Length: 441
View 1 (cartoon, rainbow, N blue to C red):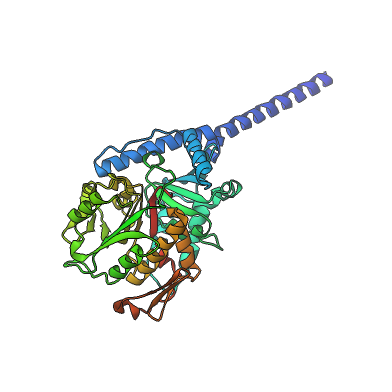
View 2 (cartoon, rainbow, N blue to C red):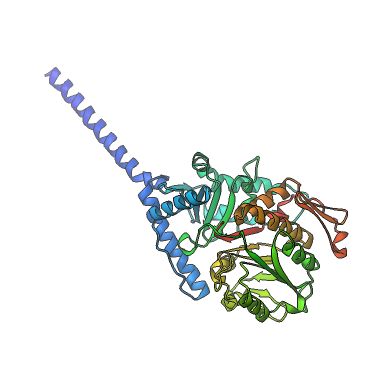
């Protein structure tokens, strides 16, 4: 009888252990997708995110943008093809802010989708840190608090995928961002030693299926540089004349138009005569709350609203790069975010370069002059912007004795700017707000 009871006891222990182990396996199998890395689940969510965000852009711009309809696996293969053709290693990062967490999705060339969730970065905390970060870096002051805030954002947005990026030698990060993140200046995220832009070239897109991401051909591109230095109802931009002059001179071939000739009709006429692949507009460009009719680019004769941007016919012949060098963006507003991040999409151009906040004339001149020099040597938009921003971070581009000093040569400043007290341009205010929208190459 005693032996029977002992056997019964061991059988009972075995059954309890088996049930506990089975439950644990079941729980773990259910939580794998929620924890981060189940590939099929992540790819399915990316498809839903792409569709949902396209609906947002379609609604905002009151149109129906073409959708490539690529799944997660197809995106991975597309990135692999880009890698093989360009010798760049791009990855796409989708980030969305939820009330309870932050979600990151990553696809690398030829790899299955990866998912990471960050519960501590819930919507409230993330929004608070972003607001504080923007307030710190969108002005120049003596505080270095932006480094701490930038590091917190890096810990949430980049650190969870950093090992994957490093293991796959990713050098280009394409950002597809949701609400509250679309106006975040990613170049200034900080890991404690480096800014993010020092590690990766960056481009932001409204959606992978909404963007043509392919190797561009800028080797023989010509620049049409237009702008105005004086306005009836807007502040003057005294650096515009020298900015345009610096852009079209060697190594770029191009044409510049200043003040009275800077009209919508003249731009269209010039483009009909010659297919300029790069269009540089040195003028006020404002992204404002409300529908696209509230945001505009200021021409000499009138304002061209974001809603009417298609009037320029920049997709026929196609423009490789549209540059707006004097932007003012009401960051933090969800409609403004859609307008800014959808700029290249709405304009019908492959890529656009614009800024989140209005940078000083001297600072803008410095960045733009350096960018075009770098672009001619790299022929890659994201790389050229990255190299320019790194040069400014490291103090290689600065102002001194009425001149703009850079590794590429010196430029004399106009009299109105030559007395500027700005010399050190390493603060993120001068470089972090400029963002490439659309294809990185």
